[in-house]
Structure formats: C-alpha cells, structure tokens
Image (cartoon, rainbow, N blue to C red; front, side):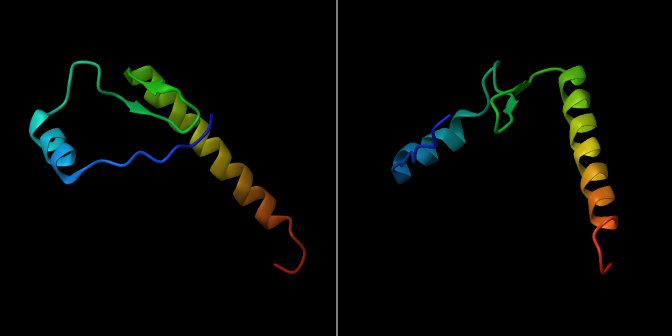
Length: 65
C-alpha cells in the first residue's frame, strides 16, 4: 500500500470536525485491517502483546546486557 499525502484546506478540516462520525467509522490498522468488532480488537491486541513479548525475549538474549 503506497502512502500518499492528502492535503486538506482549513475549511475542509473544520467541516470534518463538525460532521461527526458516520455509522461505518472504525479504526483501521496500518496493514488495512478494520477493527470493527470487539473480537477484531482483541485479536489485534493479542498480536501486539505477542510482538512485544518476542521483542523483549530477543532483547534479553543480546550479548552485553
């Protein structure tokens, strides 16, 4: 997925602040997964926790620590 810069005018930005959320507004991860349910969020947090544990374990095996 290519990152593209989207530029908004101040008027467009302020209009968005007044609009509020829509029925399909959900968080989307960097890899494009929609966190649109409790189970999706819990699965994502489990992956984050596993990544953190793996990084901590790798850090403990580094020489000189």
